Every structure is written in C-alpha cells, then in structure tokens.
Amino acid sequence: MFLSSSDPWDLHASFSAAVSMKATSTLIKRSLDLLRFKNWCDLHDKQFLPFSECVLWQFLRELQQTAKPSGPQSILQAINFAIHVLGCHMAGPTLASVRIKGLCSGHKAMALTIKHAPPLQVNQITHLEKLCCSSEDAYSKLLFGSILITLYARSRWKDLQGAHSIECDPDDFAPQFIELPSQHFKTASMLAKKLHFLPITALVFSISGQPWIHHYIQARRDLGLQISGKLSLPFLPSRADTSLSHEPVTSSQITKLLREIFASESLRSHSLKHTCLSFAAKRGFDPHIRKLLGYHLDHHEVTLATYSRDLLAEPLRQLKFLLTEIQSGHFIPDATRSGYLPESLPVQDMTLQSNTIQPFPLDDPADDVELLDNSHIDKLPTDDTSLESISKPIDDAPSTAPVAPNNDYDDNASSSTSSSGSSSSSISDNEVDLVPDFPQNIGGNCFPHVEKFLPVKHRLTHRLHLLVDAEHTRLICGRALSQTYERLDRFPSHPLPTCVQCFASKLVGSFDEC
Image (cartoon, rainbow, N blue to C red):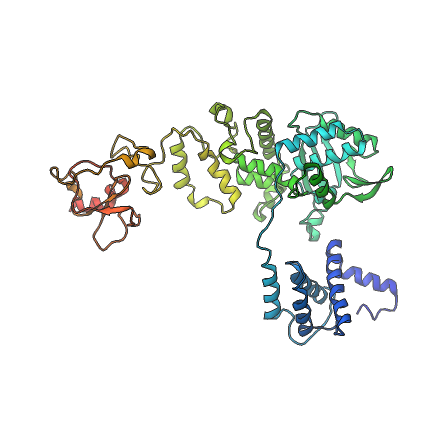
C-alpha cells in the first residue's frame, strides 16, 4: 500500500497516519530491530519479506549467542509491529510458534537478578542542596535545583522534562510548592491520556536548611527561563556553548552525573523518584497515601480523582511532616530497621500526629499484634514494601512490653506468657528453659472437667492443650500436633498454664453439658 504511492508526500502522509498513535521512541526501537533482521537476511542471502518462521528461527538461534536477555523478545515484538501496524505479510506458519516463543522466553530468563535503583541517602540530599547554593555558575545552580525538584516531586526525570508549565505556590519569593503539570509522561500512550496532565507537584523543602530554591529561581531568571506560565523550553534544557538549546537533558546524563558526584555505580536517575517514597514506606505511611504520592491511581478511583480536584493535599502535608522529622533527627531513614526511630527519644516525640501515617498505636504493643493477627490478616498487601510499613510500628515497640496473648500465636513462636484466665505469672523467653518438669503423680486430677479428652503439653512452655482422641492430628485449638508437643498419660495433679482456645471451646462445653 505504501510503495504503490507515486506521490512522496502522499507516502509520507500514509505512513504518518499509520503510526500516529505510536511514540517516537517506540518507532526508533522497532525500526532498529527490523533493520538488524534485514541486514542479517542480506548477509546470509535469506528472504526478508514476507516474513518466514523458518528464517526467523535461524536468526534468533544465532542472535541468542550474543544478545542481551531481552534481545530475541525485542526482535519478535518488532516483527509483530511490522505485521499488525504496517500490514507486512508473512509466509507459512505463524511466527509466534512454540519454538520461537520458547527461545525468547528462555533467553529472557537469563536476567534473573533485577537491580532496582536505590534511593538517595539523607547526606546525599544535603550535599545536592549545598551544591545548588555554592555553585558559581548559573547553569550549575539550575542543574542541581532541577535534580532536587525531581526528588521532592517523586517524579521520573523524563516525565518532568515533559512539563507543560511551571507555577510557584504561593509565589516565587517564598514558594512552598512548585507545580509542573506534564503532558508527556510514561503512561500517556492512549489519546485519552495524552489530553490529560500528570499533576507533578514538588514540595519545596530543605533538609540541610540551605535556601537552594532561591538560588534555583534566580538561576532561571538569569538564564531567561520562565518562572511561571507555559514553558517554551524543556524543564532542564541542555547547554550549547554559551546558550541553551531546545534539547532536554536525558535520563542517562543525570544518571552519569549522580554516579560521578557520589561515586556509586548503583545510582540512577530513577533513584530520585524512589527516595521520598522509600522514606514514606519506612515511616509506615498508608499504602494508599504512598500510591498517591507516586502519582498512581486505581481504575475505580478515576471518578474520585476527577471530582476531588486536589487529591494530593493530604499526602503532601504528611510528606512535609515526615521531612521535618528527618530534619530534626526524630526519624533516620538511612539506619537499619531497628534504628529508624531512635530509642533515646521520648515516645510522644516519635509518634506522628496524623493517624493515617501511624497505622497502629504504640501504647500497647500487645494490642498492636492482636490487631495485626485478627482484624487485618485478610487485608495485608503482598508487596515487601507494604509489609515493612505495616510491621514497622511493632518493631519499634518498647522491648519491656508483654508479647501477644497465647490465643493468637502458636506456642512455638510466642513466649510462655499465660492468659489472664489461666495464670497470673509470666515467663520471659530467657526463662523458658529453666522451667522444671513437674512430677506426674502427686495427688488428684486438677482438670476433672476435661478428663474425657487427652492431655498434650508443650515441651518448652509447658502449656496444656487438649486432643479429642488418639487418631486426631490436630489439637482442639487447631494447632498441628508436632514434635514440640508431648502426649501425657494422664492429666497432671498440679496446675499448669492452659490453652484458652482448647479449654474454652464449644466442643469442651458440649461435653460438660452431657
């Protein structure tokens, strides 16, 4: 269809219409992969068009010797692009045959380790703030200030480079927020999304206390860049000699700069987006708040976001309070999990004022564990970050508080703390091994109301459980009868801690009624 056109302008219009919904980067990537396949066909005297499954199989077998893990899969995607978008033909069986899909999937499985971009540390953030203030060159101030805005905006670098306009709230003299709505962002693939803006909002904050934002705004003035309104150049244009060009600074250039400044090969431009979101996860922010801070929204929340007009108001307030905690030293995100909240600080200083940031109260750690085990067990997220944010307040509880009641935890994992209905004494984890074995035949039976069941004792905590009969493999409370339990011939003649779930179950009550 394209080649039959005699008018070159008509050919250009036809091709532009066919790929009008595709990104430029996608077209370049697919074109390079197709060109690679065509050069191989020319070199080996093979037919390029129409596509053949046999020729593609030979090419992929040779390619997998030197290609990166995603190489064969990328070639297959480029050929599918040529077939379904450009209308190219194929001869013989389908190109997505069993052996071709297996080769692509097996070669991609070589990339078993996924290296995520690490977040920046607090001292690295303060170093960037000092560089922005101490640089003598206006473009250097603009460069470091743009990096800091990306960090505090929790944005991808490429999304911020596609910003449509810039606004300082409340003004450019003392801004608290910088709004940079972007129309060219990662997920703007469909036309409906391209007509909307990503509400990128940077919280103006300085952990080091340096006024870096004033240096950044002054640098924009000195270089003739807009401080408010629509942007005529990219958010951070590249420098050509003594002037600014219309080309944006790429993500790879920012990655190279960060690695040179901090001498770390693991840092990437995507670390800027991860930093504040990582702080929020370590501090225990609600998963929905963290999702909004990262500009993610579930499909069923689109209407809510449309009519809210400002869905980021509360998440940004909580983020500001978190950064204030980091600045004052009440929260240390670069420490290990046990050192996020220093123990030397009073509990009231470490507790956030917002209830949505602190999922569980720190007044009674035993109650926290009970809430986690009973009412929230079906709502736990599966991702590691969310699990860390939920379990974090429990780890920060004072170590002298009692552990969870025995009706929520198995005796293998809990201490020998007795329930309030069975015993008033508590045994710490260090004293469990010191509990002696009581003699069996001292006097009469202390448990006459459950003598129709078989007694089972935990070997470490000496807690008494009940078994219906010898054929059952689970106790009445539901725990599996493992090697940590010991079957007794008779009930002991002395009082022992008892399992509340076993002794207060409906099954035991029905036997008493008989």
